[in-house]
Image (cartoon, rainbow, N blue to C red):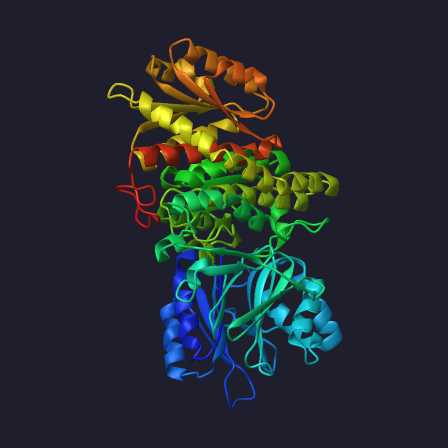
Length: 615
């Protein structure tokens, strides 16, 4: 999500740091900043700007810093709005120590309370990162590495941090736990970055800092230490990527990269949402007592976000016991819907700028409804306009066809459903704990699905070989949780391959869609375990009897569907309400491989835009 660059060497460090941050712009950000160790000053030079990197460049150009050690950051806001005050680096009150940070500190409220009670420290920003700077500052007695090491024993969560101190003019200390950090050195320069792209101007010999470890950089040199401060080694490797390939992390396309990033994105979206007794949505600003006044929930969204809403509907109704409707945002305000002050309207948009969704939300507010936005973009129009907001933490999504935004939206919506259910007294702590235990297992299960890439690629090749002018058509179907995935699978395939694809509720097959089935047609059946699996099996038999080639997505250990289908893609077992998060990955991968086989531009398909800002 965010980007970190650190430089220690023999030239003015602000230039290399700004250039490094520019290589990370593709990750997405809403503010930027850098800190330098300035000769002749008794404090660090701190330079920040909200908005794009060009704004920070202007601030730096005006100030003309001269230090040869600097750390910089591009921030994708999670805690606090995208403002200059909330931008990194964050410092101690005397501005002699600065920190940049990627990730989420789960116990930042507890640490902040301790700092306030024991040291009288009051943060000036809304971020969790400022707490890290103050914590290290209270532990510092002259040994920066040891102060950082002790701080990591207090912090919980996922992080990569870079730290500089005025008293150590040629040193950067870094620490990693669950977030990427790579280092490169030359004879007289050491550079750290959250992405290989920032190191390529210096070296292609890369060292990755292992989880739970620290690093200390000095000009032309680096050392790595374990959590006890003992010397250790990192993972070293050579890269021969171009700059564009580096931005893609070595993947052939941004879409491939973003599909592969889904386990991390889902994990980040869940981080800090449950403390064992209470569901937390830190972004929420309205009085929680309002949650008890609602008698209905309406979800409004477009495209892939609409499909995420369809998945989440069952979770909302199951855990909140409120009637939940899912509306296409572009239709909502034109049909005179019944909306009032007892209605909670949940508006979903990856970009936070989808015109129809914003208009639907505004219409609901005009009718007295309370609105809750779900978006990947802090500071977007949706985030600013909603009564409150949940940020999905997917990180920037470059490919037009959405993948990781979809899965993180589902997770964020499930968290929201649990949050509302708990506030309304519908759920016991033990019930919520069991759900979060299941959700926490999803990233590993997603990795299992992603590991089938080569096999799914072979199914895609065979599908393309079956295509003819007469049978250039693919049908998807499913029921309950499977229906939104059938709709999303068809949308993905048509978006990037330009094939004619449709998704249907399989219970509706005999009401018309089955007329499209003839020998040679490919059918993708979402047939994972659940209350209606046997019904979907009957639909598979119906289309098989008419000559369709069936690829079924099934739960691990299911031999019943395997016996009916021509091919199966296996996903691990999961809580039924969360199973779509696993079932959607195969249809994303299948669409990607089909489009690649047809030589389509998967990142920028024809006629489509990433953000639909007009009606």
